[in-house]
Amino acid sequence: MNDQTSIELMDIVPLVEHSNFIKPLRVHYKQSGKLLTWDCIKKHDSVAILIFNKTRNVFVFVRQFRPSVFLSIHQLDDKSKNIADINKQMNSKAGYTIELCAGIIDKEGLSPQEIAREEIIEETGYSPTLESVQFITSHITSVGTGASIQYLYYCEVEDSMRVSQGGGIENESIEIIEMTIEEARKHMLEPDHSTGMARTADFRFALCWFIYEKYPLLETAS
Image (cartoon, rainbow, N blue to C red):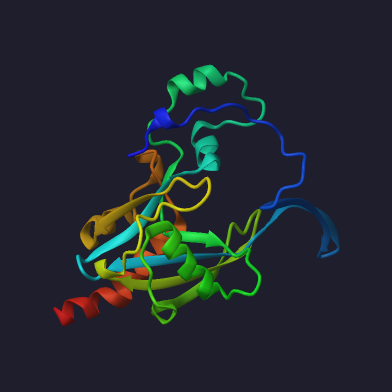
């Protein structure tokens, strides 16, 4: 399992050059005749998938380091210069998240459903059929700064569908986390600040959806 020894903070600097992932914008607008200003971030839409392994009745989540979460937990910005001290005092869990399998929509010609299936293969190593990647809903994320659409899916897999170890591609370092239904239920309302381990909002919402929509059917079938 990854820990703080695998992360070494090097520097924090303002973003001044072009980014392929976000675009800071300042919006000037009038509301009720009053001139207002709001700072926003334009970013890609995304997909997220709640994966349930029917062979062993476990959820399949991912765990990875998120620099933005690390900065938030340690309250750091580009004026933080005591990098050596920060590295010495790092919380072993700070910056790591437990998430749904997910990815941005940045490939032309592919539907969100097709991208969701690709993310399942790349991150978890399971290769489900496209039809088994079921649409749940879509919602707007980060409404205060970087509003974008996230398409939420549900997919059931079996051990026989595993074609690789997963872990992501290129520079991704993704660890697969399996949880029973009861183990996952404990994460639904546990505050992130109590453990330093962040859990995303779509992770929590998808579990609520599963408990409400799917769990009764599974209990009936058993």
